[in-house]
Length: 286
Ligand code: PAF
Image (cartoon, rainbow, N blue to C red; front, side, top):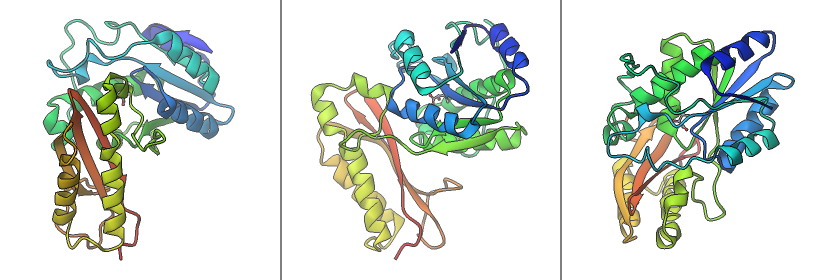
């Protein structure tokens, strides 16, 4: 496995392997089994082609009061995981290498980014779109894989790819969970013991309400949303940032279940740690 530390190294690596298909797995490091599953899926997808994993804690997607400085960084362990799971190369640029000091251009997606994480974290998706576009231009992948845990991010990246004509196929991969259902996230390591014990309520609630929607037990998306809020609020350590029942494709909040495939989205604080999760309702609501 090759380690590429600069944009020049990446571009010359890409130039020397122009006849091979390439799958990109963009990450911010602190890799866990969720990331490993993306690399595994990429390896399967490209066959004899290359899998390029990128590790970069992107400052442009963190707000001024967010956890950029304390975001976990463990390059050595990350490289071991990438090698074990079959990455051909890792691009891990230094902290100030991706952007020029006076860089002033960023990419703004103005529809899907408006609500939920976009509203709670102003500028977040501009940072995501900008770095992902740069990675697409530098690495020129055929395919790029992203986790469904960041469901809104996946939709925004699909729109970015469509609207800017990037010749990249975007593949969404299922969320990987701990045994108690908590979605794997680099931020889980920040949770105190009590917060960690409380956190599975997020997934349990979304899953149970999704099953109840499927069985026809909620008359409306509003009733389902209220049930999610009530159940999560029963956990004293949980503080809801947002909860919504949306259409899986457009991400528009739903007034009715008719002709929609609903997706339940939520972000919840446990102490200072903000966790996100989402669950789809199976097709064919009764
Ligand atoms: O999902 C992430 O880890 C990041 O948002 C991404 C896509 C690597 C961009 O920095």
